[in-house]
Image 1 (spheres, one colour):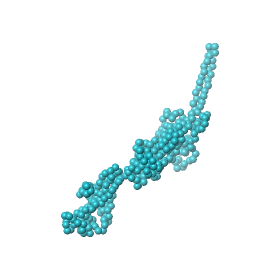
Image 2: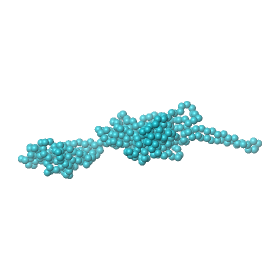
Image 3: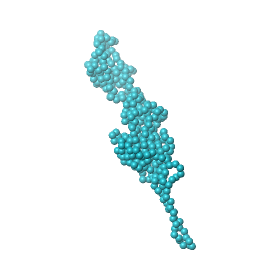
Length: 352
């Protein structure tokens, strides 16, 4: 058996926090135990009871290796572009009749069907596996331990496993990254040390404890291979912001507000329109920065207005005062722009 110094403190804790086994094993009689029964034969000779004759038989219960891996929940995991710590959750259940270790591996899918009637089209990054160390069913950064195997999982016990990944910044709404978690049975019996690979007993039943693989086929593995796999996936919900900058002449020194022209001295109103497409994620802390060219001068007497509206492509004279001007740049922040929503930032400047 190979020791892993990195995991010595990890899997020891994990073993203490697994869901406990039921006293009555659904997996059956514990492997390696012996079953003995005795038969007694009573008889008479000439109507007189004679000394009974007895015989017994003892055999060893063989080890049936079986397990399941299941996604927790029935929907995809919704994520944002650039998100770190995106979590998909699985349970690994030991349905064997023996305590075993289980090696864990998380694999990215390369195209094809995901777990929820969708299609994989990108890979998550920085994929890691954690165990629910405090057994609270939630991923806790700094508490749940990163692992490569489950240590000493008792028969009928389950462990909750988190696959934690990062989502590339450039993904768009509807992108899917499918991930598969595979657990493979290993020898148990030595705490904090991953056991050796299991070997199925070939040939006839022996007098000792034989090993029989009894697992079914998982998402990507076959039946009777001492392993089981299940899929989950990440689906991106991104904001889809579009920005439009409009301007209109408010007045000029010669015509006033009647049919004004964009001549030197004219006042121009700028309107920055921020729209978020329907079905997108809400964009928050939308920071607008607009450096003004040297050919115009900011009109400080008018101010900056945020969260205005648009009607038929024309900015309305609404919104609330806010924002700031400094170093030749107009700045303002929209707290949020929800899906299907449009908001504006307005200010005025004079043509030099």
